[in-house]
Length: 117
Length: 112
Image (tube, rainbow over the protein chains, first blue to last red):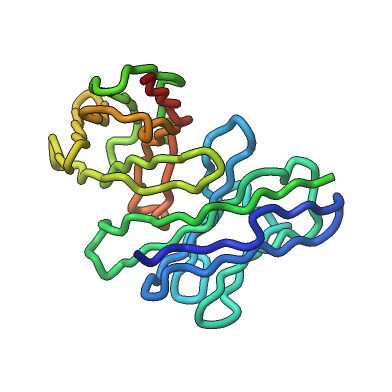
């Protein structure tokens, strides 16, 4: 069964550095998402992306964050100047809007654990 | 209305049924989902239900939806040790870029 893949599985970065998290969504999916889960807290929505633009973003997704689909297969999340509180598990997800209005289960990757020192 | 609540922990014996409960507050939700997270792994989609349905059965899984009370449950029949994991319910806001709002997760422990 096709799956969403994320790299790296664990990223350790110094505070203030830029980090790029990478995702390869399921190939025929058109909607892409990033979520994060701070240790011990809920999974939180960051951003959704469709047709090469952001369709929705949360309050967490401030100017330090950006997303990009640099080619036909990758979907990246960049954090420009990392802070200690950015330490979390970051999940990428994708869905297929052609299944019908609203019926687009989101399929998640295994996540990237980001540790900011 | 964007709060999804779950109990933190559930312990059952192998072979028993497990019932994991979830409450949500937004009546405009269209779909409600159950995800499973095993240690060190991602979120695995288990099942989902459309908001105009009351029940959905999928092998050992039964989802019940009480829209009036905004209550969702997941019943796992004949629970196995491999079912031990954290179970998240999530609601979809279709008018918000398909944003999923998750509950805090219920840790299911299955004792042999």
